[in-house]
Length: 114
Image (cartoon, rainbow, N blue to C red; front, top):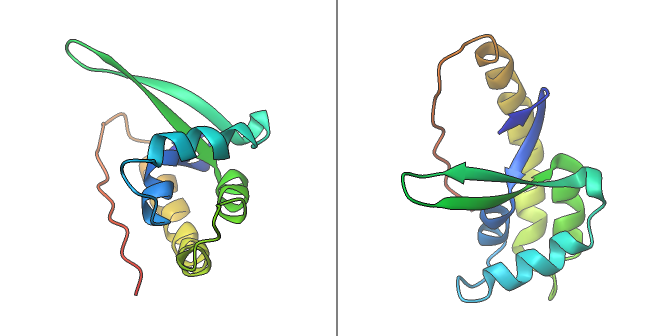
């Protein structure tokens, strides 16, 4: 997601990519994001037909802190950080091309690290 031209990431997706168990992911997100500076995180609300869903977003620098604070240290974290650094320039170009559009679009991502 791009906010003011800067990339932001869904904290739950980052935690999933780092290998956190679905059973403990929400607890770990709360713990890891509580240690981030206020400018590194924000909560947005997605409104469905019947419910509202709070989503925690973290900035690019927040992702780096999030990864470095993961306990226990995840071996996959280094690979994830490297892939993210490779992907960010492409994401920025994509956001720049589509920021002029009023259209809504969905980007589906998968966490695949080999």
